[in-house]
Structure formats: C-alpha cells, structure tokens
Picture (spheres, helix red, strand yellow):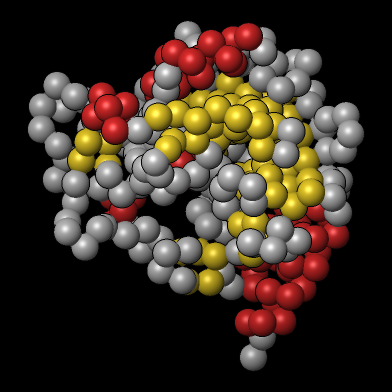
Length: 266
C-alpha cells in the first residue's frame, strides 16, 4: 500500500495497492495530463531524485523542490507572535525543514490557496503532530487524500489568528483563497496564483487556467478585487521564487484589475 503522487500536479492520493487510474485534478480543464500519459510516483522516489531547498525569499522563509518537481511552486512560512502558518505546500517533507520550522516556534496550521498546491499536505501536517489544514469548503471535492486534519471553512473570511486572515477570492477555483498577513514593516498578501504575480513584479494577473490559457471573466476579477477591499497591504508574495510585488501592493492590485478589464473589454 502506498500514497501515490501524481507526477504532473504533485498531489498525493489516498492509500492504495496500485496507482489510481486517473488524476481528477489534472483531467480538469485548468490543468493537463502529460502527453506521455498519466504517471505516478511516491514520496520515497521524490526524495531519491530531488532535494528540498530552504531559503528566505524577500524576508520570508520559503521551501521548494530542486530540481523542479510537478508544478514547481514554493511554500512560505508566515511567522507571527500567535503561531506560525505554512502557506501553500510542496510534495516533499524533510527532517531539515521540520527542524528549521520547529526552531522558529513550530507550526500551528497549514493553509493552501487552491487544489493544485495540495501536494503532500497530510504528510506536512503529520510531521507537526497533525496540525489543521484550512481549505475553503467550495474546494472540498478536490481533496484526494481525506484526513481529519483537513478543516473546511465557509464564508468569505476566516481568521487563523490575530495576524493572519484567509480571504476567499474565488477566480481560479471556487474556493481559491489568499492569506492576509498583518506584520511589522508593512502588511502582505500571500496569494499563490489566485493573484498571479507577473514577471515584471509590478503587476498581477488572473486566469481560470494558466497552462491552458483560459482567462477569467470581468465578474470574477471584480469579485477578487471586492474580496480584498478593506485590506491594506504593501507586498504580494506569489507562488514562485522571487516573483513578489514588494511595495505598493494595494496600488498594484488596483492597476492590475483596471489593466485586465480593459484588455478583455469588447
């Protein structure tokens, strides 16, 4: 019995004797199945071929897999006086990563922007004694490895602690969420790719499907802007190493929405 991991999206499935026949996440129109067909691996095989990189990204501790595995996102540690939260997830856990987080005060929870980044979230939770994993209930169907640690929340905002608030934005997925972080030196939004930081690092963009290049409609983009109304933030931390909007994040979001809506207008 093994918990097989999809090679393309990096998401781990429930325990089984043989690999699943399909990956619903990759067969969805927002993702893709590799041209050679569906393929599977295990956590042990990933560890044999890759290493987990730990380094700061614009002042925030980050974790990524090298060489790149699956989608290639990196996870972030939001450190607060009220407890630390791992934002987004990757398909590999190591003793070194656990030790570094423990050195910084441990982990109180995990929160993930959308299903493409669920990866081995249960393994991460169990490495810290089964800490809760907060996911919006609108994305319940995409949890491929059910576990009591997964906690579904409802509504539009959910406070993890006095410093961290989950905000349901929708868009890329119905339950797509970002994390607002009140912190000294300027608040931040950890966005995954619900707000996709552009390579210029001055703007963000919005898509229903990134690999298949399906844009969001105007209503969905306005809903994202509305969901973040009332939140101030200086920085936006995206899903990839170094792709962060540092300074004027609130203004960057407003300008990005205006630019996007103008581009898709009739």
